[in-house]
Image 1 (cartoon, rainbow, N blue to C red):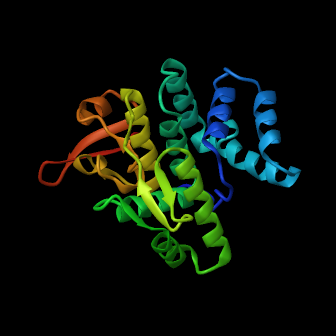
Image 2: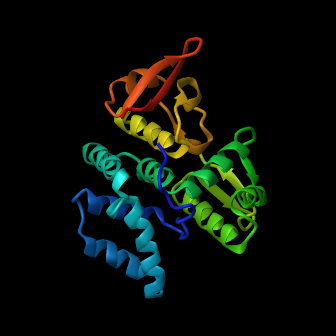
Length: 238
């Protein structure tokens, strides 16, 4: 499951509305002109708009070749359940496409697991340990945190110094749940123990269906199997 994914890439604040409109364009429910007008109204220059479009392209409009089928299945879920939270689908594409986004999510998920909040400085410190102590790492971590706040995952308080978990978002649809699990597999690049999925830090904003095993067993892209002493794991099916 090794991917030639960009190490950072997610270097812009991406508003929830922009993700939603890009998804609607790919689903054939909106026109590119409407997305362009939305970006025109929120960006002061062509360079900024172009960089935002690059991220939106990778998320929905022009995903990497190995993610086209995955994106198409996400779009189909959206078509069949238009009331599903855009955050579920946007988050899944983001962690599958951008390891940097996924790592920020994973760190925030771990740090807020016990008390529901953490210092943003601790997130920055841990990201710097992984990606290097440089201004670019800090700036892009901020971009991801701002985006995750816009998508309803966290609240930033004290001028962004602290992060608070928002109430969990229901994945709701069974296919969406399985699709989100597949996004996790693409992010971590290895099989995952079934009991561990519900508490995976990288998908901390979402409430996962308790009937997960039954849901995953019906999805052709995923495989459930037993390893070791009755340890049920889920993996990608090749």
